[in-house]
Amino acid sequence: MNYFYLLINLALLLLSFMLALDKKASPLRSWKLMVPAVIISGVFFTVSALILSLFGVSVFNSDYVAGVRILDLPIEEILFHFILAFTGLNIYVVLNAHFPKNNLEKFSLSVSNLLLGILIAMIFFTHAKLYSVITFSVLFLSLFYVEYVSKIRFMYKFYRAYAVMLVPFCLLYMLIGSLPIITYRVGETINLKLGAIPFEGFFYLMNILLVSVYLFEVVKHKSKA
Image (cartoon, rainbow, N blue to C red):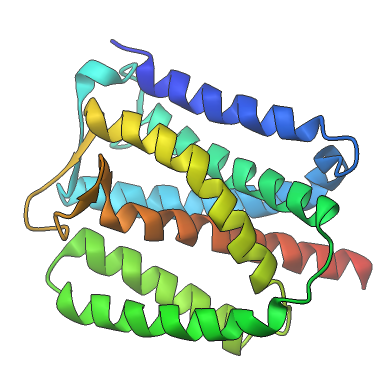
């Protein structure tokens, strides 16, 4: 039994509470908008992680988890998805409060189109690798929907929040990957790492943040209607 992964989750949660103390943004005022976004996002990506675990794509090292499992996942992995979504939304709200201008939104579609093209290429080249193809496909569908179906415009602010979110994500994931708390079956990933972080991990983070922010914005717009 080991509480290291649990401590990583608590560190991420502590960051969220520190952001909540920001008086100008006051993220706590948005908690009613955050809760449904965090719950839906957390459940969705927990199910995705469960599927990968059931197929043996991801394996958790029992030496680095507390030993409490729900279905086939350590409790820490489930908490990680909810806390990561919550932290991302806090970063998003704080940045929007301090930098409210949205004048660069006109460039966000170009960035998204470039990313969509990259994702199509990655799906093609990794179609036989389960972890890779699921990660790239879900992000492609989410991004395409937000840009070409949804009428809510927020992608510049999303990309800004994602860039900031990379800092704590990289620090924590380097710990998760270097111990190793979780390993992926050879042949199911690109097997390319930046430090201890799998290449797909950066897209996985974008997945979680994009779904969370979109749901947050949907709830916010409905509350104003």
